[in-house]
Structure formats: structure tokens, C-alpha cells
Length: 159
Image 1 (tube, rainbow, N blue to C red):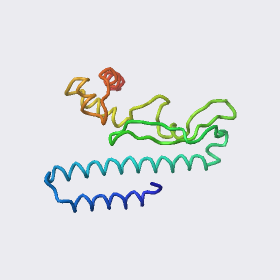
Image 2 (cartoon, helix red, strand yellow):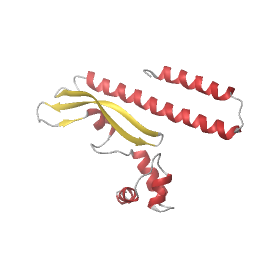
Image 3 (tube, rainbow, N blue to C red):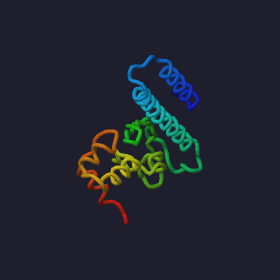
């Protein structure tokens, strides 16, 4: 998908297909199918938006005047509350300091080795208040997160 408009059109088409099916699974089946479509659309929309932001950062010569592109289309995968998001971004080198980095990741507040988004971390910590770290890691993220990671996120909470 290249645009939000195409994404919305695809979602509308899929919703129409879901509504027109003869169903033995009733509202439960419809709700699960709709949830899958919405999660997929959310990931698609995030990908499109991040691509647009990366492009704007690249085109903003004033903002990145000391940065030069070293590579483009480097992938990053991060777990979000709607699933695993993989996006592409440019890798830059600072002409003055020699520092390397991804301007998009800096703009997003994503650290170099971060694999779990702040939204999922927050859900894990909130869940860990009521259940064990292991249960929190299993039930509060799209994919299981280790109990030691949950413990680290709880430990990083500033009161």
C-alpha cells in the first residue's frame, strides 16, 4: 500500500466481504475477522506514516544539514500493541562529529536495540501489577515477552 486512501479502500472492501458471508460462527467470528483487519490496517497505516516522516526528514535540508545518507531502506522491527511493525529508514552519518544514526528512530524515540514499543511496555507493566511477570509477558503483548524483560520494564518505572 502506498497511501492511507488505498488502505482505507482495502479495509472497506474487506469489511464488506466479512458482512456478506453466511456465518456459522456468528458475531464472535465477525468480531475476530474485523479485529484482524483493523490490526493489519493499523500496521499498514503506521508503516505509511513512518515512511512519510522518513522522507520529510530526508527532504528537510535545514534540519539535517550536517547529516549525510549512508544507506537507505534499513529495516527495523518493533512490537506494538497492534502487532509487529517492520519499517524502513535511512542511516545517516554526521559530517561534523562522525556519529552515525537513524534520524527517524531519534524522532520516534526508538533506541538502537529496542524491539518492544513503549505502548507494549506500558501494557506489560500495568498488567504486572495484578499478575506475575510471566503471565503479564504472555497476555499483554502480541507475542510472548520474557518474565525477565517484564521485570526490567517494571524496574525502569519512575515513581
